Length: 453
Image (cartoon, rainbow, N blue to C red; front, side, top):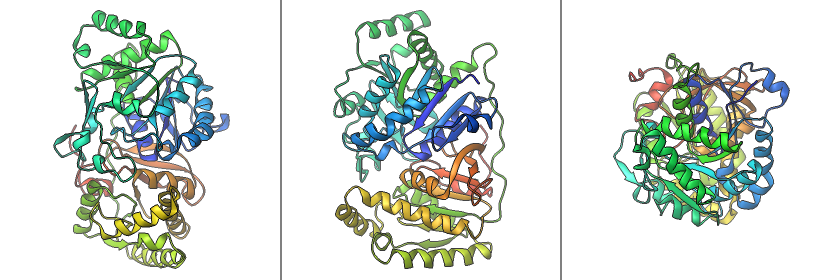
């Protein structure tokens, strides 16, 4: 096995996003929940990329030292020339929660070489970086906002993005220095672009931030990443799935490189189960679309789930959901319907009383809920919505690894599960709150055709 890339996703949904970008580009990829053993790798012959779906996005710096460093070390021992710490394309993080700066410090120590590359933009997801500032759509079908003006990310309940200049944002999280290869540099011809990169290397900075504005920039950036890896491997990169898109675009231009795969969209299923812990307005609109097209709403009292009555609340939800699934209904279990849901304020108060454990406990409750349902029945297709929710749910229901089954909207593919008996072989989606168009869940069920690409 000769790996091109090893990556760690700082949340579950972002990890499937990176896997999708590689697999559809013809780079054989499998996503694991933990660093794979030799026996697990042997079960997937021909692998070119390996990912681990993690939870760095919710970790404190101390937790990163204890939990992230060993995982990145295990990935480095796989021998790939590039190690990617995959973050959300909106770069949301803070000095105390999901610090990308701290993760980069750990990554540089593991890699033993400098500089690290940093890249947030991913044009296919509506994420653009220009002169160091990050811009993003809200979903895939909204206008483009500067990140500190973004209607969702600027108001994120845990890691609000009030600074769009990523160099300033990182400076709050680490003392590592950062230079910029900007959009004008990316328009230079090959030799002049190489000389520009060399000049940045000579400056001795710890990190190089790469702008990206157009799809045409991706193969250029991928070539520069590989050039950096040849200079001193392994190269450590902190960035979005734009990293995978850039590397794949470069590899596909090489003689004998991977060729894009044509994978049909999801087949139609009669019904499915949706479990959502997302407070995003994008997810709210998608859930409402599904409800308007016949799904049944099963709202959960999220505040009660954090109290003494949680057992009774969960048992009642399991009973009602099983009854509805048995009748062939598509069911939407949710703890929040967007930022204006009245449940949100009460739940936030509970979070404050519980400290940092509050959000994690709610996600684990949803994981236990889904596990209880799957032990009694297996819906034709299951969707879990929310990055933090997905990380907890995947662990609790017993997922070992995921492989791509079908694309939907970029960033949240349909996957095939390998794992415990209750989940092995099932069709499962882990979807980020900001990902997908309005009719995403219709495409997931197969009732809406994918757009031609």
